[in-house]
Image (cartoon, rainbow, N blue to C red; front, top):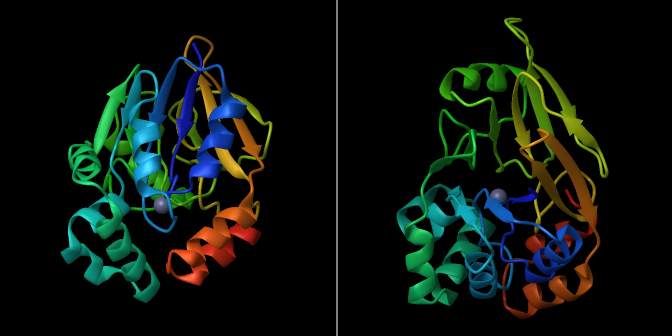
Length: 242
Ligand code: ZN
């Protein structure tokens, strides 16, 4: 069984379509939050994801911000502006879909969260210390996270106290052993210096994780972000993936 793992689509429909085309065929989709915000296609992305086969989808901090404008107080100027734009753009039906997403899910012996198992919506796992602390907060062999927009793996073997980590490059194939925390990177707003859309394929029978990158028309999305009146920074950073 091929399970497509995506996260942080951020309303970037061309990036999402490129990922779906490159990843096909797949049997199920696990989406790790931040479907909307920053990009120009929030409704189209929600509707495309909602209709994917055997979908398990959890919520992210940008869903929280867009759906509860009080939380936007904690966002900076540009983030606040695009959260308000997105809240206005979303249809009631799509808001309802996002409002009902869970903060965490356990599917096929994998824990799914946006940020971390300890603080599912907001915490970033970007270092071994934070990863080690989070090992106490999930029972399954593996936990898949998003949020940092960086494809990463943290793993722990046996009873050893330390945690190792690895940045996941395009085409890497991992055999998962021990207890691992994995991040597929971001579809619509990569932040690891690679501008291509990022995703992974997980095969539970063999416990393998395959990491991929795919190109899409960045310039077209940048133009539409600017034309929509969204902050230019959200468009500019797509070129460098940072
Ligand atoms: Zn995000």
